[in-house]
Image 1 (cartoon, rainbow, N blue to C red):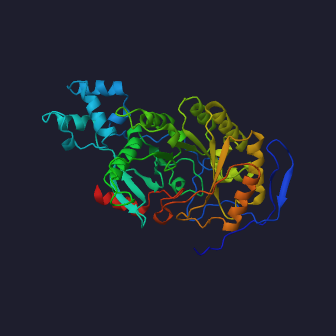
Image 2: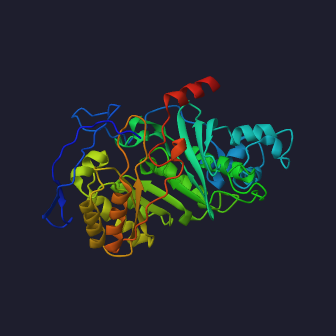
Image 3: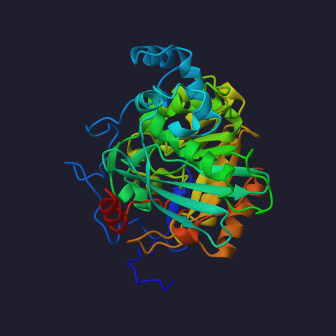
Length: 429
């Protein structure tokens, strides 16, 4: 990729040497300031990056079986004039056989089957486009929701596991300048069932042999084993629906998907009150904090929500999550050339994490993925390696993350509904 000339501010990169100390480190390495290039960042009345925590008012999606508790499903079926036990039959078809097709539900009475399915399993996601890598082991789906909003999810096969990156909002209100999703702003929160439906549709495709792997193998018993809430949206800004979805994921079949909570990762850019609430849920999901800078000076510009809750507040909340759950926390860190990849920032990050204890955290540096309208680039390999080395040498387990799906714009930070996507969706409507 040819790098377009950009404005540099050549100045010493400075930051507190420790979160508990006033000392300052300095280095002569170049420092590129964050700037939106190719798009205009939304600002509030005071000129600060706009943060959207509340979902805009739009028509609600139809109520779906996956929006309801098992008891509520029974009552809903009775409202349709049918015996309550039909709710468990429907749940079995949906959560175990991954189908909403009435024709496949031969254990239901033929004369009421269509009515029951229409009332309990209304269509939620319409597939607009599917992109696959050459090996077919990574697939990106573009979905249209009932109101025309567009979201994406990414399905990935790894040795020994299958991971689905799910969206929790259409768009995102956190306004991070290096993330394609954040450029669009927040369209609306997704419903619990819209979140679950991404998994059910993925499981159906896997069972039919549609996700890479050896063609001769029987894939009928395979399914998504790992969920990462790292698609479109800030999961903790849609807290109730995301947690209701997690409860359905871990509920035993046929009440839910029967997944392990330890295979579910919930991420956030740092909504501290919601992190504290998550720690009290009693569901041992993996928690991931998208940090991207260890110093407030830079993070204020990279992650606008840092204006509400600073680095140390977010790290304190992350540590409290570990203390309450015993689950090791992940720190996500997009490595951006000359912006946040300085060696001193690796040292500062290590200092801040070690101040809170040992063995509670794992760092995942991620080479920045290219996005439309931005000329920011990933760090040089030698710089990435030095960043990782410094953290590991400080006793912080650190692994450079594999960025899958980059060639189909399906990697971290690349999910966005483009003008082309909107045109394709309109053509199908």
